[in-house]
Length: 469
Image (cartoon, rainbow, N blue to C red; front, top):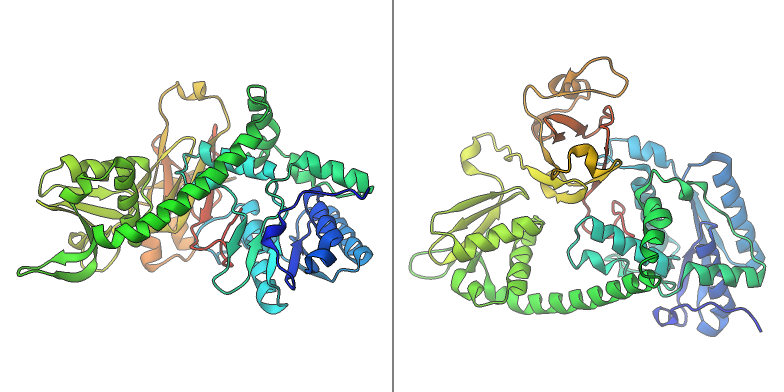
């Protein structure tokens, strides 16, 4: 009997021109072999797509040669390109710093989008598995994600420019994949960087998940099920918000005599908000904030609810998420974070974001997603709650640049970087324990015990500047 692998063929349709992301690893090799075995029955036309990231030297060159040989063996067209991921991560083309892994992911999906439009392809399939799903959900849970974060990796992502990304192996385990390949006598490549425990993802894969599985051997399955539940919950909530938001979220300000004057604010009537269950209150507040480019975390959302339900007319709240809230007799009004009283030069008021350690936050004011991981036990911090402050630099701030002999003024550093105008005024830094431990665009002396990771905030997972799973 021919070996088989469970794949979700409901994502495919006859006549589809399908690119298969092929890294050379077990997952992608298994996906290509399984789809090739069923391609005639499914009626799909396959292309193998390999991106050389310019990392790992001879090892990556061997990956490319392996993938090309496999595509030739299966008589499948082979698409490939090479990028300089390290140079891209170092470059100033993005508004915020990226790790190598983040830059590689962004470049990979940018290239997929290019293939969708230029080859053209109808879809690109990636080999994310049930294990990848479990790792993603657990990572997002550790960072304090809302339920949309617990949705994990989506089986299908539509591109606004046409085409889509498909994940046919999300219900398939890594163990099933390796059994399938061994039954085929099909070799695969091992990426040595997957064993490096300096990367959070690898620590979750090799340390945390195996430890948790001593408590529940079915944990990966349950985390994958949680993602499915969360996706369905999110779809329902989105439909409910699409129905209710136009009735409850009012644009602009009320004017004497009736009606509302259009401006860049939104309001929610307090009596109507108070009638709703807390879950819907939170959803509406976050939905309104999202219309203004803000993504309040749990604490900020609760502050908004408290102001609306128990606050007094005239009370205001300056939100760290780039949002201002004002309580009137009947409304909670939300406006963008710029304060008209801050000055006459039109410079946005610098926003501040408080980050828990470990934790992650999105900072729209800086087009930035920042996460902090612990690399030593909590006891090293005295067992006290740990927070850091993401803010714009201030005169007098100093940083210790890596390999430098003494601290330098940030003002002088920005001058040497030739940063000017509003970018200079709003240049972000991260303050921890009274000193700066991270600054955009500069490698600072590492802070013992914590690791800071920064990446750009992007609107869509298939855009060339996104970082999808």
